[in-house]
Length: 366
Image (tube, rainbow, N blue to C red; front, side):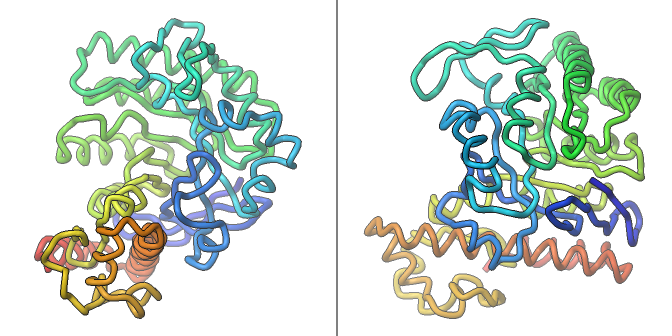
């Protein structure tokens, strides 16, 4: 992996990640293909939408269908028919969110959500799983902590995260894969600084900001993201894990973040909500029963050009599965268009103007 910054506007950066499987323009939003597919869409749909990279979850794929099946299929790229770059999360967040998970310095013991069987995961096993998947960027095992948490428990998780990062780096063998470090520290600036220093000392090719959007106030999160991002090496990519609403992305881009992922646009689509330039709308509401307008009047995607809000509401309320595809497609079109507009604004030196205009319109409502 190579990373080059081509333009900068304040702390916002326009750059490019280069892999053997292609190039990715940053800032970039990664659709979440947890189990090897973005729900309701095909890999061909994602290519139509212009996505250059996706995220998958190593924990879920190791449980079902298992790395043996995926390796036999030629790796995750071949398995899911996606020949562009893939980033995998270790699944640490999902594992530690499980009720019965037991954590010690060795790793974690957890119960599978699929069949209830017990499994142990270690930093070395996390690396092996992702190496077997054959993806392009991989994550170490880390320990996120929910908000609120005491400083002592946050410190304990930070120490464990650093120790596990060392073990992951030692066990990592495939140079073609970029192993990123993860910064933890909850909402304590001193701990974020300590974690950043410890992880930077391990000299990873990229750095992730973990442990956000776990219950802390949005303003506090934004301030900590900005603070932490500036602690990281300017010449290496910065990845904000699991954050992806439009306003959060724009704020973090302004802080110098390059990579984002989130289930937000696809999750709300399945719940009947669409993204527009004036905020999120709930299509199933009775307001739209006889509405013949497009989902988003300012959108050029085929859903907005060809389908009415009233029709989409009808499909939702009669539980026709087609609507999940239509709204998901639109929401991911919206997100990709947002990233292109952000990239263009940085390139022209007008990011702050874009941020102000987008925020005002988003908050104005329909």
